Image (cartoon, rainbow, N blue to C red; front, top):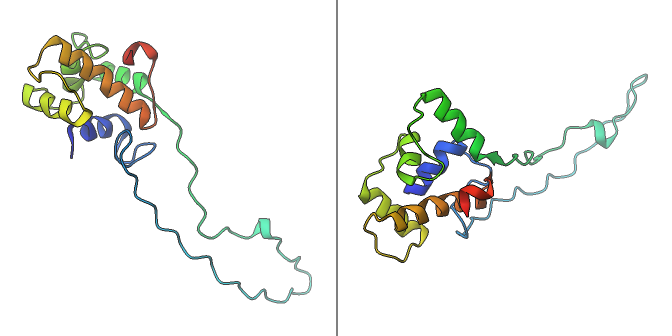
Length: 153
């Protein structure tokens, strides 16, 4: 699993709001079930009112769309449960990854930078780390999260 995929799973759970890959990735078409064959309606029985279409169960009904995930609330909740006030996950990619129990090593951040399209030197500089944090927040938003402007701009 990609580094961003691990971040997304840690925040959204296994089946996030949009599933699939991050920002702009190809989404595979979901298989479409064939339409059910018309069924023979039994003759109404005496004393039993016939069922209307709205009373019959809908075959192959799609699940309701999931609500966006409030990324800030989820991360705040994790930080509160862990009780580590020294992690500055709001601005630090290293602290964000630590909060989510992910390896925040330079190698992993380089891999994340490659995944997200960072074009600068992958040397662990403040510039790279700031870019990574903002890019992760933007990608979380693209994948169904609600992210305050201050965390992505």
